[in-house]
Image 1 (tube, rainbow, N blue to C red):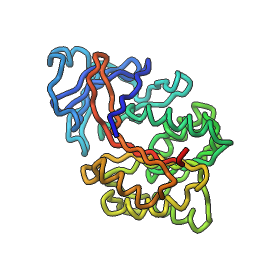
Image 2 (tube, rainbow, N blue to C red):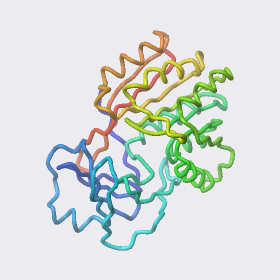
Image 3 (cartoon, helix red, strand yellow):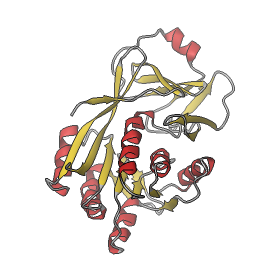
Length: 288
């Protein structure tokens, strides 16, 4: 259980962080955004941040705010990742997000390795957002089912799949809990399951999701969908309600001793080696 730094790629760089913010480059554009994990002091001066940033997000971290632009930034731009093979569209949302979570780079590498070890596995991505993990799984040879409750986000995911010439990803606009329950009734089996649940969210019909209330039930059901012979699962958590130790123990309740469970922090590192912890990741796989 240790901090695992993200591998930097050419279209992304964490330039600096601290005082509740982070300064990052995505392709040609540098963004200044809030970050609750950035509790230390910054390395660069305030003026350096102003000079470098093409856009600064002002507003609460978990609510609507606005982007203040220094110059012209297109509504949509692309970055390439994963050995420059895959590309994904980025955009400035009113909630500080931009369509990609760079700390997930190490998860993408793990997904690719696991998929390549299996023969055309079925992979389920829940709370799948704009599809970076789905793209990696599909490009490695998986049959992918991509599930998210937001119609607009699924539409952005569709654009990402089409931009990478993948037209065979199964896209579902659905509440994750309801979808899993339906798959259980169908006796579906997946060799890979990816979970990226928010602390709070709503389904397409107003269903309320609260991590601390609903995660145990979801894990119980998901564990029954996972192939008992060759399955792997990745789960990210961001809520203070689930510490690394608590999440690890929770997973042990639903996955027997024949599974290996690794829990650690995903971090991003600056060029000078400073690390910013972003979220807890839990990886479940069969014991070797």
